[in-house]
Picture 1: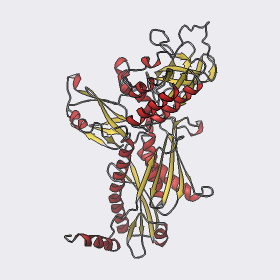
Picture 2 (picture 1 turned 60 degrees about the vertical axis):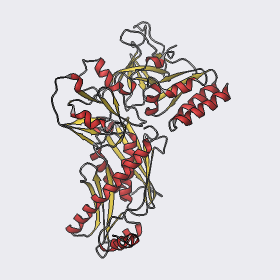
Picture 3 (picture 1 turned 135 degrees about the vertical axis):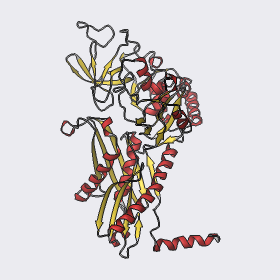
Length: 282
Length: 231
């Protein structure tokens, strides 16, 4: 069952994944990674600190003096939505400025369109089978390619059974603005590790990227609340696609509707709704 | 200034004498459509425009630009097909959006912006620009700065009216629309009609820049309201 431990497997430091992966893979050059720049100054901390948790708009600027520091710990890492421009940091998306100790800053925004990023796990739909690669629609601006050898146990003789229209849970190995994105369904050890083609049944639907991040966050309260209702399986792709399967079709639909309604609800509203549903269904 | 109630009367009379900023009521809603990646509706008085943004999405080979995103702007009139007037407005909006967007971050992709006119009661182009900016922001597209549109009308007697209604537009001697950026309050685009002096143009630009402050503050407030639940 490829979906069994799907959310255990998803990146645990999920909000900052785009930055994290650049740490894991040191060979990646700053040019093609998503990390916008490492700023070496202590002054930065100060000007970011007052704004953490506030809503910022494109065009807002953090100015600071550039002081070269030897100590690596003093570097500030800017994630999505922040761009370095000379000796200032420019906000280029609207959203809330978030901070993760010690020195990670990014803009948390509500978005619908997915832009592939290296290392992210997504749910794709196979659209074309051509020769030795599959074309997979992941919701980005370009279709991603998935080699038939990038499955667990696949060899030239033993091809994986993938049909057009199948869903796959896969991870990006190449994703940058200048190249065709590439997916794999194995980890670096050659194990499936939860990835692969989906089984029958289940329901696929789309939610906003903001909600997906909230679902994948390590101690997600939405998932915790949802677990209390009834048993079901869920796979969450970073591209906003969510796959759900419960015991009956009715329960599957209930989970899907609950998740979709989470988008614009406060914690109290959500918990009240979930409780009501749990009482009705069981 | 000491006698409170009278100051209101005084300021109302000033409107007729010197160019005082008088913008109509704004209204804005983001993410109101489910299909597009970003959407907004912008209301200025009785003028109302609905905007939808799709992208970065797959681009037609013929329209592909190898180092940046292709931006397409479509203005749909309230009734009938879009004609030359809409084409001219589309061009203005596209030039402005291209200047604000960091389109090099999404090369070989397409961005489409669709503006549906709900009702036209003057200052249509500026309302389109405002709706476009809010929709682009909602879609989360990288932008170097925000922009807003301000329309100024010069009446027969030389008075300048900001954000005119269609009646005021009809009676005006000259009509100008400026797009102002949020970073340095510079003019990004101007579209003018009628005859005016250089001095009047400069007055209008200065007035628009002052008006833009108010609009950008409105942008900030409405985006803050939108994120208030996730704060």
